Image (cartoon, rainbow, N blue to C red; front, side, top):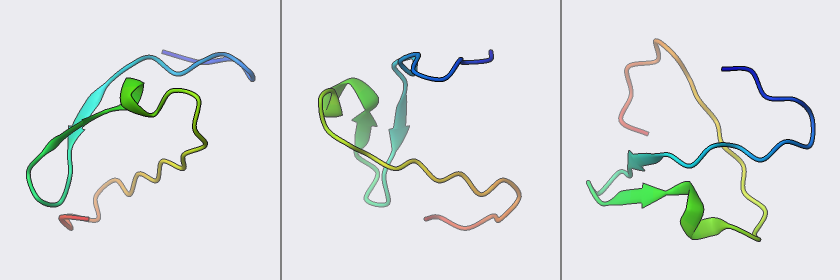
Length: 44
């Protein structure tokens, strides 16, 4: 899936470092930064 500039990201959920599930939609209207480190094999 490719997003265009200005297009909203699709909703998704991921576990946080405590095991709780976070959904992107819970942060709607707020500024967030997502950082993905593929192949880092770290829990954070």
